[in-house]
Amino acid sequence: MFTTLSPAAALPTYDLFDAIERLKRELNAVILAHYYQESDIQDLADYIGDSLGLSRQAAATDADVIVFAGVHFMAETAKILNPEKQVLLPDLEAGCSLADSCPPDAFAAFKAAHPDHLVISYINCTAAIKAMSDIICTSSNAVSIVQQLPPEQKIIFAPDRNLGRYVMQQTGRDMVLWQGSCIVHETFSEKKLVQLQQAHPEAEVIAHPECEEAVLRHAHFIGSTTALLNYAQRSSSPKFIVVTEPGIIHQMQKQAPDKGFIPAPPTTATCACNECPHMRLNTLEKLYLAMKNRAPEIVLEPGLQQQALRPIQRMLEMSA
Ligand code: 13P
Ligand code: SF4
Image (tube, rainbow, N blue to C red; front, side, top):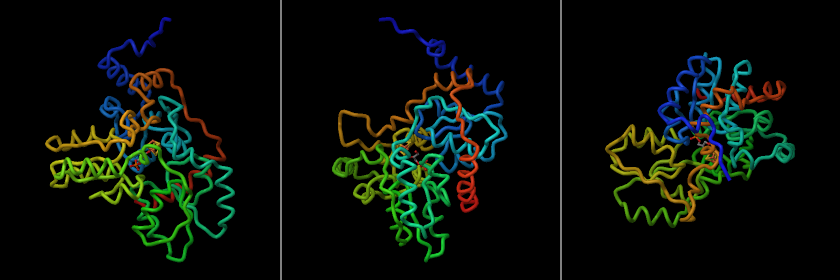
């Protein structure tokens, strides 16, 4: 059987870089990329960041077209913030297990069962869940947002049970947690992490709060991807065990070239389960083709977009 190469796949990487730069000028486009994207995409992005940084950039851009190198909920957030702009996602199938773990119908029933609760939703959820929420948060600002609420305020936190539990520990607040999780951050094994620490006693463990409690217990520092990157730069430690998606290590190596970064291994030795299968669906070629074809594009029903906007705006106001 013959495989037909797409015109983009036939181009060498350096030509793709040039072609993407050209299209960027033609479209007046901006390329926003998450740290979990492959290195080439990070290298050509106009802005690389965590979910909060990317939302802020999306809210501030004056580009006509936003090319979002990330997953669907991130591009959807950019569209909610910019209904008049075209938002392109290189692969429309780039979803998120965490967002999928919170179906709208089941969440509506959960919310109805807790009528006097304020709903704080992690940005890793669909527009439908955002529309049912009072405030959106990210892993950068979840603790601070909860701390800004009156102590007597009852709270539902969705969809990530691990981030929710971490926020409860940090704030001393009780919250009702939706039991969702991220397949990538739940893949790290405590046993393997401890073995790695024993092999590298000089290394500090830095971890994302989407990880399970047993893993976070071993962390010297816990934070969002941007917070982990900043910590790796300012810490005097020469080596780090990085307990999040290993895409971030590309930036860590660029910003701290004299330091060592070891990706925490997944539970199963034979898989690359610490890489997000959704994020990794995007490739340089798909990004080029999305810009060339001006598709796939994020399209949202205007009523839903309006409802989902307010809780995102509240987040941006509360983390200014
Ligand atoms: P942050 O971008 O907030 O660090 O979250 C990581 C993540 O899982 C994104 O999907
Ligand atoms: Fe979703 Fe987890 Fe992938 Fe982030 S790393 S996009 S939370 S599945």
